[in-house]
Length: 222
Image (cartoon, rainbow, N blue to C red; front, side, top):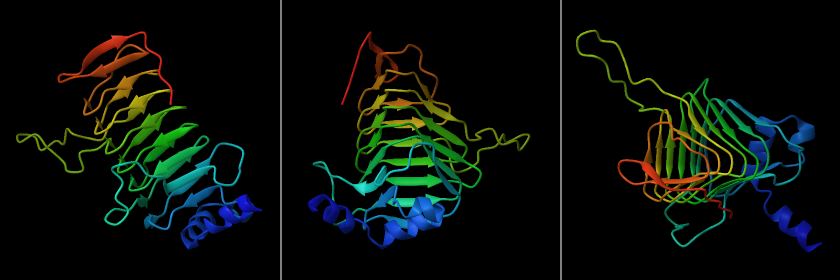
């Protein structure tokens, strides 16, 4: 009875709008996605696809808190015009921003966790593997937003590039993952790092400036 009451208290208007906007009735009525009241549903276009058995609260957006969370001055934002694919459970905390352009794709693996005040911007394609997580105040972005062209030819050369984050990857706090980044499975990206290229070697800690391998043969868990 207590569990049922707790669940019903979380079915707010935003959860209703989200589920019935993106899913057929038989799926929506199960509320596979719970949306916190502090989430700004700025744009609910495109598609949300769940490639997993449907159950209530499989995906939660805008919940949870850590020490740096500011519930008064911050809110999560959902601005989606493309496709967002969930391959299982996902927990996206308070203050996170999800921005997916038209014709772009954002893919979350199973058992995904993202801490508070993070942002993901997909203009082309971002893929995150299973059992991976992103710590607070990190940015994952596959575009520069603006165009930069060669002065002589006028040809734009800074097009969006796909980002791939492997399975069982932990991205530390205040990291920046930019277009073209590939992070191998089993890796840890040290806090305050920037990744702009393909990293080599699974089960390693990457960090520093310039980016380098800090330690190999590691194993990590939540």
